[in-house]
Amino acid sequence: MLRRNLKRMVRYPSMTVTLIAMPVVFLLLFVYVFGGTLGAGLGGSGGRAEYANYVAPAIILMTVTATIQGTAISIAMDMAEGIIARFRTMHIARVSVLTGHVLGSMVQAAISLTVVTAVALLVGFRPTAGLGGWLATAGFLAAVTFALVWLAVALGQVSKSVETASNLPMPLVLLPFLGSGFVPTDSMPTVLRWFAEYQPFTPIIETLRALLMAKPLGSNAWIALTWCALIALGGYLWSKRLFNRPA
Image (tube, rainbow, N blue to C red; front, side, top):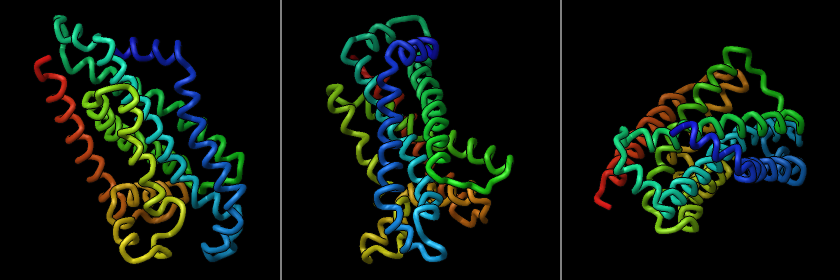
């Protein structure tokens, strides 16, 4: 099943290119168009260079959310084409169909994250993490991707069409904007600040920032990992239930 999904990724590279293009466009837009103004509001030296360091972790997370949108679309395509119904009748472990999509999406996410991080470095992102920090970042991103991909698998199965599958994960793409991804939460109105501070993507972004900039993790790390565990478990159980339902 993993080989099948990797072959699909190779045969249809436009999907991977599209998933990479969106975060790259946002990165260039926020660094070169808004970076000077937004960076001045961060305090310190301000400016475009400081804002590139601030926004890059949010863009990296958006790369993951863009990838899971592709996962939901792939699942919905399989459902629409009837191949899932065929897999249900075959003498194979049913969970292998879903885990093939999950592992394939994680490979696709790793490729996308590598490209986007390289572009971020080219436009001025200057992380101070050492080798240990980069390895911890890679492990943390793998955990976040694993959790969100399982949620996307469920969203793809529950979608009635490919178009619906492309739209259902959109709130996950937008959540970094409603967190600490692009501006500090203390600059927001009270109600929005409360939502931004307690939604799952804010501790995830803050953990990425701390790992990449070699800063103390604080409580954000365990909060982020708790969210990841809950999302992964919920997504897996929901996906399994949907997959095993009568045709």
